[in-house]
Amino acid sequence: MTTGRQLAWVPRQSLLLLSLLALGGCQFHGTVPPFSAEGLPPPAFTDAPGRCTSARIRFALGQQVSRPLLEEMRLRAGARRAMALAPTDEHVPYDSLRLIVDIENNGRVVAARCG
Picture 1 (cartoon, rainbow, N blue to C red):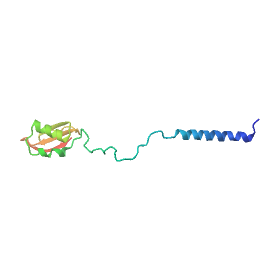
Picture 2 (cartoon, rainbow, N blue to C red):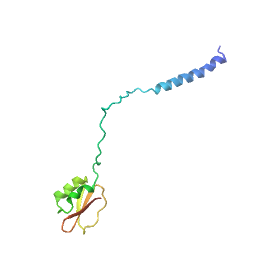
Picture 3 (cartoon, helix red, strand yellow):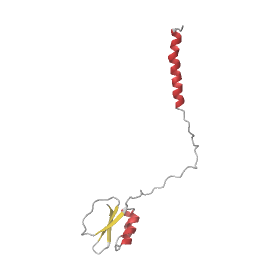
Picture 4 (cartoon, rainbow, N blue to C red):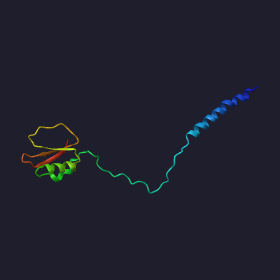
């Protein structure tokens, strides 16, 4: 026969066992690398690919537009497409990956923008 005093230990023992199991499950089993100066170098900061930056094409201002010049401007700006627009051309829909080169009626480059 069991007494009331012995039954009081049963919940305490099960709580103790349950807490030990929970703490055992929280153990870290990985390896911690030591601190050293031999880590990886920090990443280099570059423009994201496919990002148009029209400030890089200042070299072409005042030059006569041509296919090779337009391609060089596109590559330097990081654009996917490039097009030349004369003052009489109508506006085109916005495209953040396109370089638009504004030219005079005589074909000289006067400005460039992305869009």
